[in-house]
Structure formats: structure tokens, C-alpha cells
Picture 1 (tube, rainbow, N blue to C red):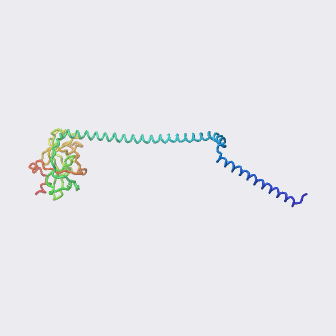
Picture 2: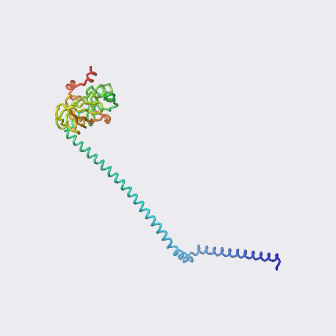
Picture 3: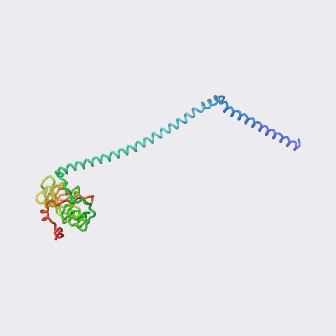
Length: 296
């Protein structure tokens, strides 16, 4: 049996030899790698075949991956395009429906204008108004209906003058100040206006009810010839208003006439015009109790 010291000495020499061999092999590998790297830079044609073989081997996998990417992208684009197209179609349908509604509204307004002009037999005889101003406020205490006008005696406005908007009658001047006036509205309980049905000679009085509506009271009692939708205009009687100005449209019938809504809503009128009294002498005998009280 060999001594322990000699065994350790042999083991150490063997380990040193293996370590030296590893260093040598690593150095040789590094040298070969450096040589190959230098050749790839300075003589690339020597590696053309190797690169071609590698590319040939990788090409099917690369093409397959590209096909998968392209295919998935195409599928996603088709799906998203389908939903985008559906959304756009729904939006276009909504826009077309709104356009059709607007067109029908415009046609209805046009037909109504033609009908009203035909009923009123309008001949635009322009008369210069005394003043044009805004209705700057209104009051509705109890059954009284007044409005305030931003024009007064300094502008030529006088008591009794009719007030109208482009749509029709609003009322008439009740009181005047230097720069403002008070208007008696058609819907006031003291307002009584001679009217006739447009298109014939059915005459009536339009009386204010104080609730925004007018009571149409026929003068000639008997069979009620009125129908909802009938348009009433000024008759010219009473002297305040010229004939043919729109007043109200009948909404329902009663035994002696009917109820009507005013054509010209003061709350919706931006500007109104004050005009000369149609027949001043006739108007003197048509004053209401409140007007007589104010002038006494």
C-alpha cells in the first residue's frame, strides 16, 4: 500500500495537467473563432454557402410565421372592418331618418303656408309701421294679460294702435309713456275682437279667456258650422285692425262657437310692429271698459 503523501502528490499533478489542457483547448478555440470572424469580415464569399444553407433551412419556418401573422392580421382587419361598416351603416340610417323627418316637416310647413296664403288671399300691401320694438315683459295676474313694449309716445305710439308680429295679431296699445307702452293682449278678459272665418263670411267675436285661449262666439246662432282647424282672421269691423290678419285657429267646438289658440304667441315674438289704427273714427265706439276708464 502506497503512502498517503505519494497519492496526494500524483492527484495534484493530474489536476494541474487537466487544468492546463483546458486552458490550451480554450485558447485554441478562441483563436479559431477570431480567425473565422476575421475571415467573415474580409472574405465573406467563403461563408456564402453556409449562410445559404442556413437561410434555406430557416426559410420555411420564417414564411410560415409571416403567413400566420399576415393571416391573423387579415382576419382581425376583416372583423374590425365589419363592425366599423355596421356602425357606419347604423349612423347613416339614423341620419337618413332624421333627414326624412326634416323633409316632411319642411313640406308640411310649405303646404301650411300655401294654405294660409290661399285662405287669407294675401296681397302684400306694405304699410310702414309706426314703430318696431321688442316686447320687454308681460304680466299675468289673475285673468289679466298685458305686455310691455320698448317704444312709447316719443316714437309716435298712441293708445289704441294695433300691435302685430309677422305671424298675426298680438294686441293693441293700452297706455303709453315716453319710451314704453302697455299692450292689451288678445287673451286678456277685456279683449274682444271681431273676426271671421278665413275663406267665407262666418263672423264671430274672439274673446280673451285669461288662460291663453280665445273663445270664438258666433254672431249668428243656429247650426254650428265650425270645425277644428278653422283659421280666424280680423274682419275689419271695430276699426282697430285692417281685415285679413291672422288671429287664431279653432281647437274645439262648442254650442255657440268654439275655443281657439292664438296664432301669434307674444312669448315667442322677438319683435313686433305698431301700426296706425285702421279706422280711427270707428275705433272710438269700440273701446273696452278698461280703455274708457283709462281715457276718462
